[in-house]
Length: 141
Ligand code: RTP
Ligand code: MG
Image 1 (cartoon, protein in one colour):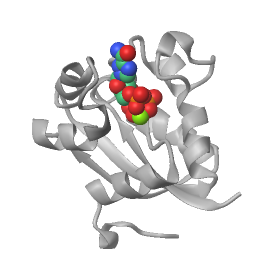
Image 2: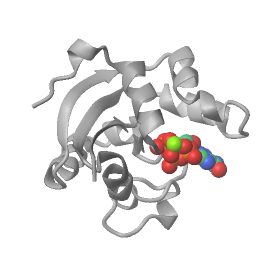
Image 3: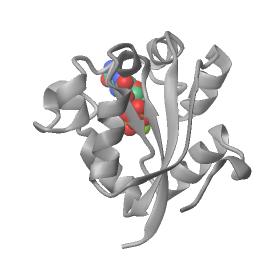
């Protein structure tokens, strides 16, 4: 297993539910460290650029609309196998299919408003971290 970094987003629905702390606690309890964090409100341009891989998909406009609907918390998580570990903690994209005890099972109801984002590969983690953070905003520890 490798020490990795991954990009995590607490999406507008979870921020609106006041679940920021409970979600970050799950990362920390699983051994992942928050090495960068900020709260932002995405513009349509920033949301579309972040999810550019989905530009041709039928759900793209809804996804951008949702991601710009309220503030989000963006963070870099670091640890052993951080990318897969975070995806395990998140659960399936559709909360109705997410395993009990996962973040999406516990905090989300619909596939559109599904509480969290997590990078899905080493390559996307690198791109996504650089999308939101300058190097000097990341604090290894
Ligand atoms: P994310 O990128 O947000 O972490 O989610 P994911 O990897 O689990 O899912 P992905 O395939 O990357 O899709 C990105 C987001 O688009 C919405 N989506 N809707 N209606 C649909 O069939 C559909 N498929 C995906 C979800 O909100 C998903 O999180
Ligand atoms: Mg994805």
